Amino acid sequence: MKRRLWGEKPYYSFDYYLKTTYGQKLYKVALNAGMTCPNRDGTLGERGCIFCSAKGSGDFSESAKLSVSRQIDSGWKTVAEKFKASSCIAYFQAFTNTYAPVSYLRKIFWDAASHPRVKILSIATRPDCLEEEVLDLLEEINRVKPVWIELGLQTIHEDTAKLIRRMYPLSTFEDCVTRLKRRGIPIIVHTITGLPGESLSRMLETIHYLNSAGIQGIKLQLLHVLEGTDLAELYRRSFFPVLSLEEYVSTTGSLIAHLDPSIVIHRLTGDGPSDSLLAPRWSTKKRHVLNQIHSYLKQQDIWQGKEVDHG
Image (cartoon, rainbow, N blue to C red):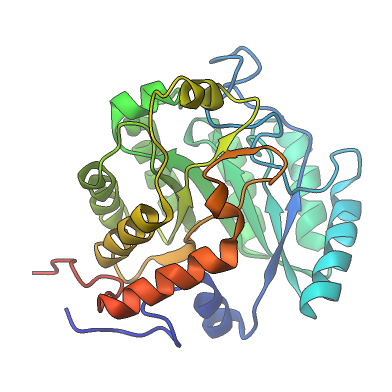
């Protein structure tokens, strides 16, 4: 495949997608709608996924004590002051954001969609928590304002999924993707790089699978070991090693080279809360990590889709 550039980067970045689709860069306001998760309330489990913090991935979200509209106002103030932005993405981040009665979901999602600063709704959830009534609601809102669904797949390998207590099979993910595609709702998939027992070849198998799944976006999330999680206990018992910065950079380069160039990369790394991050501590320097990835891609002449076989 011939080398491609998306702006100044050799991959289809989230920023490039926003600028070419919406004419501007949009920043996410992370929201907490006060939900839980079937993997926490006893339906499927009580301790959540082994890497999940007490805040259910909502470590940087607004307070659930505020209404959605007030959370957006509060988050928007920070975004506007820091980035001089004019619009934002309402990101329902904490826990499983379709795990509630449809009447409640209708209220909070329409509150967000009706906010004058909100351009897009991005809703993080599980593929086993998207009933038809919920999809009806999402399709309804999507006709008025774009709705994205973010699904936490992490890996396609069932043994790893069992270890991390994902608590649903790959077939559930496949069925959910089919139903979302039928309704024209864009799908962003979360994967985790560096899960225990996941070699580069296994991570590439997840990428190859997603290339043919018909998704629109992906987050390549570095594994964070956070205090207070079951993953932290495994780490302390030397159950698995975390990736070094050099290993993460080279692994990310390989994943990008094998990723279909039509899939938007929403994230290349992540920054866990520094006060609870046990490992890897180098990940707190997010800008440095991204610079290292960009330098590596340039040095190795890597671009998104370089190793994708379209024949």
